[in-house]
Length: 60
Image (cartoon, rainbow, N blue to C red):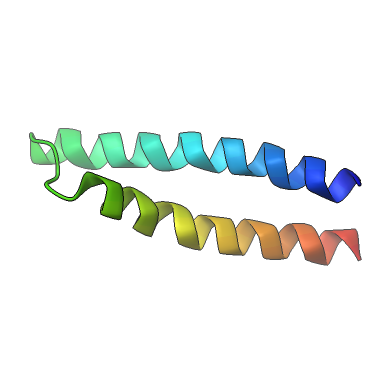
């Protein structure tokens, strides 16, 4: 049961982190990216895979 709580908390944190990273990229470029949602997904997905694997490893 606690594993689901960890996943939920980490998912929210990763969403915020990915959004901040995307904002930093756009600030450096000086413009919004044309495929912003795709770039956001490309940032979020690897972070999620890594984080969720670490949570599963630590739970066992």
